[in-house]
Length: 384
Image 1 (cartoon, rainbow, N blue to C red):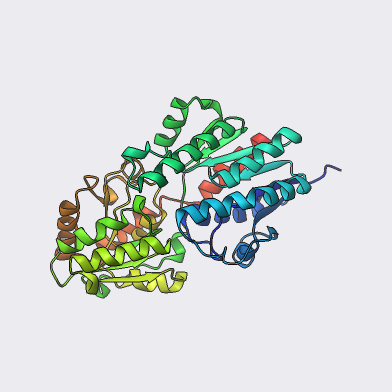
Image 2 (image 1 turned 120 degrees about the vertical axis):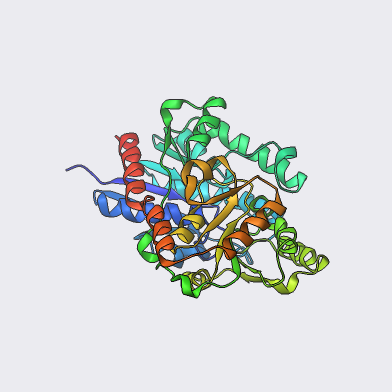
């Protein structure tokens, strides 16, 4: 009788007790669906101890490594890098003891990549990797220069290791093209995409809408966090923005100072992380969803907002154009004045349940089941 294939999803990068980011939600949702479709596979996840409860909602088997005091919260970028550096040894040791047939590293962070590269050199295992997006050179990235430079260097080192992976899953064709230019084998790079469970996001009736915009993302510069003060300043006084998401304290403090400096602090509500039910309640009362991110592999929060019927305004990223097309309104990257005009126009224009149903229908194209099927086929091919 053939033994069950052991597959480990490696998520050593997690920084909070909740599974909150788009990429983390995606790998958990895909793993749960693949496990149902493939009972002959033994699927486990390896991550930090403080995330056990969140991971157990998706995985039958959760293996954790011990973490130090205070690691269950995201600090400064420097603290994150040091936290990940401390995890390398325990991750590598536990991964080796699990003796998997295949490891699926859930991101290109060095803490997820380097342990698999070490394990692959020591044992006969297969490796499926993931790249969400390719960092721009430091001077072109919307981030602190030192952070951008370190992040760029670490990602390029991870890429050198990832070239040894048996397969790489990406979210869009632009990332695939960029990886091919970086000498990844085109036969090993596969566009898996992403998706949402539309049924979890009830259509919000147009009668509920207010003159509020919702921004939902990680609180960091690459997500356009510090464009919000200028956008708000360009909007009429009766329009407010709800900000949902967590991030380093240093970025939160900087945002608060910037909002106060331009006199719009009272029109921007910083909710922090919200559980799903509370997050959907804020979205249900909004008039428009906004994403001023400078880099995205896909845009799960945009798809969720569309599923609830909200008009969406975002920067004109190649991934947004490829994935969402005319379903959302696009603004030239970095043009905060034009972004504010689009928000105001969306709130001033007619909106009804018919228009909202059309946006929900657009979101329905992004099936998690189909995404899971594509990822399953890749894993099956690699493990065979």
